[in-house]
Length: 410
Image (cartoon, rainbow, N blue to C red):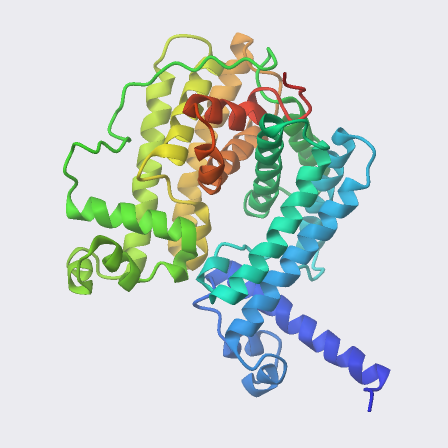
């Protein structure tokens, strides 16, 4: 016997409320700390009521991720309907900015960080990753049908960077009033479409002398350094929950006791991973500040070095997605340091505008696009590995910043 329409509607509304409440909790505290009891409490239900809709927590988590990916895909499809590339990019950015505005104004909205998909059971993550790849294909279609493999690689990089920029937007949008969103939206589109340097396409980075940020195979690492490397790679690939103490210890062929000899808890290790990553990024920034040339040359040299770390170094920089699992106090500290590094990039841009090497872009907006481009680069490691020339991989990826997404490349 079919359900009555009002019963079906109530069921759908309550299920949607549960999914949205879980989304908020995952964004605030991560998957591990999100429980059915906390979700129930957030919407005034008891845990038994939630289990009627989702008998197990993992079913709820999968639904949250699936609905977020479906929303991302629908936004991409709506933007793809525009008749020019510039309009597609502008529409895609607009949809993400206005979604965040509606959420800020109190409308319930669903946009969950997807960092812990790979911590789910294989069948669950396979289904979600397939849906995610379909969404990526929609964004890649913004740029048209590639003429060859070189252009296919370029379009893939552009799509990846565009998606990463919009997934990072909810974090740094908090620094702006919704009254400023329309202006920020315009600046985001301008930077993504036309790049940063005054001379479009300029890319002449200078080599930086290693200041301790690279991994040298011939140097025997300390065991704590090995823990940091293994944890960074595992968190980047599997998320916080997927990077268990057991897995980290097994990757290094040591005991859990050895782990706890160096770290009181996994959270301490995550914080140390962030500290090490930000220390390395800061050292590269300061080394680039002292090279000869324009400020765009200096910034190019920094970006080139950081991309080489993300693409090819055994110890990449930690992705900011690990933020979810930290408590609010530590999360605030990590975001604050991230913003300081972004402001340093903004300083390079301001000085570059002064010496004529950088366009009159908004430096605060551009610095956040730089941060999301660097942060997302780890996910492009397999993409970069397909290039015969590593320098070409870095230059192709960063061409979004050096010439913009509208540039036609030979």
